[in-house]
Length: 111
Length: 111
Image 1: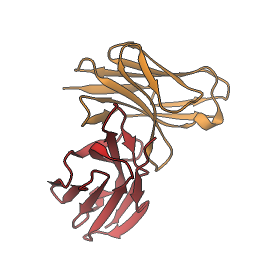
Image 2 (image 1 turned 90 degrees about the vertical axis):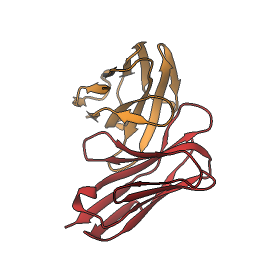
Image 3 (image 1 turned 45 degrees about the vertical axis):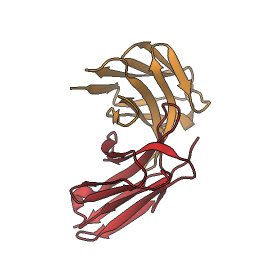
C-alpha cells in the first residue's frame, strides 16, 4: 500500500479567506487526482495532474503537482460556503491499475 | 454518456448474515472496476479491483470477496458479516489511468 498523507485533516475558515491543502507521499506517482465529496455521496473528480511541476487552475482552485511527482497541493482563493466538503487526493503508481487515496481534508467554510 | 449504479443505497444487516452489493456501469465497455470502503470523514480504502471479466485483484485480506460475472457488473460479497464491515462502500470505474468515476455508494450498518 502506498500512503498519501493529507494536511490539515480538518479546516474551518471564514468566507473569503484563502487556504492550501497538502498531499504528500514518499512514493512516485504517474498521475495524481483531486476529488471533492459531499456527505453521503461518491467523490467527484476535480482535476488530474500528470507532469512534474504541472499547475492547473479551475476557477478559484489551483492545483500543483510536485517536481518529483510525490506530492501535490490544492489552493483555494476566496473560499465560499459552496466549497465545503471532503477533499481527497489520489495517486496512481507507475505500474498497476490501483488508485491510492489520501487521508482526506474536511473543509468547512463559514458564511 | 456513462453512468454508474450501486444498490442498495442503504443496508442494515445482523452480524453473521451474508452480503451482496452490486455495481453496474452503462455507456462504456471493458472498464476497470473498483470497490472501496470509507470510514466517516476519511479517505478511501481500496478493497478490490478488476481489469476484466473474472479477473479480481485483492488489496486487503478481508472477510469480503468480489466477482465480475459480466463486463460492466461488479459484485461485493461476504458469507458472514462482522461488525467491522460497517461503512460506506463505493464502486468506481476508470477509463485509462487518469480519471475515476464513482457511484452513489452504499451505507452498510452491521448490527
